[in-house]
Image 1 (cartoon, rainbow over the protein chains, first blue to last red):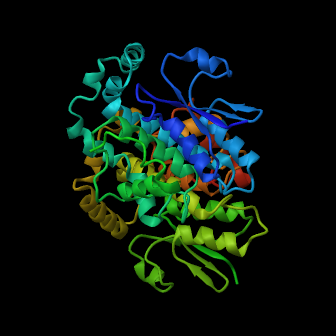
Image 2 (tube, each protein chain N blue to C red):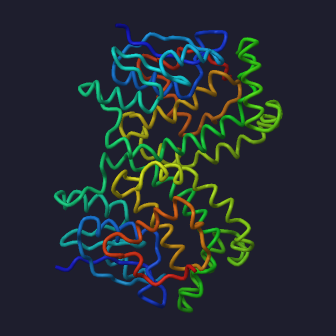
Length: 229
Length: 229
């Protein structure tokens, strides 16, 4: 049976832009595993419900169905123990960086790029996305991202812990990348694919780290069409 | 030879308040190791230089001298491999939470409590501390902490990643504490000992976690005199 990963796209199936799907795609590559890309669009909920899921990524791997990026990582680690480890210690010790990424990084990126996503979507998905996100932010999406160039220094300051770590070692995992790198990288891939806004300055240690991630596994992530200038 | 740990105090040698010294004191306890407390005060630089150090903690352990909390943790892990592990994976995977603690947490705590440290110091140390910290902050210390009660919600919001992690598991290390817990806990001990300001609300998952840390190793940390209300 072919391994399959449901990944979020807009009208262009090549532009897979979900930060959470990127965690799983990089985790698969880390393990040396192929997985067919199953493009999925907002509002196609019944396609996920058929597998018992509510959001992407969903991984179908033989008899196993995993409906969440964290569970996918645990599954890959347990099912492919001879491939390079995603977690170099107990997965619990990766919870803090996951929480930081979800509450600080991804939330900060969203406030800079969320309005860029709408033009990438078909009419039905764009309507769903706009309504649900405007409800979440309590304002029009254009207003959420208004004045974003002026807010870039503030955003970049929130990357302090990441920057300090990456001046000490090439990857969050140490000398080589591990799942912590993929967790954080996913949010930068999200921005890179949907937005022309340059989140990172070229002389930032975080920029150099992102470049290293873009080069991994034959340039897997770099090959995806991006709007970043 | 007796194991010795140089720890920062003010006029009362029982009030050991350095966040970095607390990392090492908890790490020693985790390993089941005793170490004589060597009280050290600001400006006593020649006492550190005698051991090749510039700041506390300094650990003297047999023939080994370690002049930095990170090096102390690595030394304890290597020298006492049969005692419980401080690091459940490579130490490099603990760099991010260290960087977060140093750049976000400790910096945030300092802006709330730095002026409380002065009255705990003797005249000479108080003069040194005030001058060096006022230079760092670019303003009088009373001004740094002015209006702090009103800034508590903002500070508590920065604990989001910690709070989310600790609603998922009892310790940053998972089911049991590891060096990540001690890194973060040190900054809360610093505040607790020197300041009456209640940094944490009693219904916060971070408060409950701190309570668990205070109880560890026979209440080692709780036994230290504290100014927190």
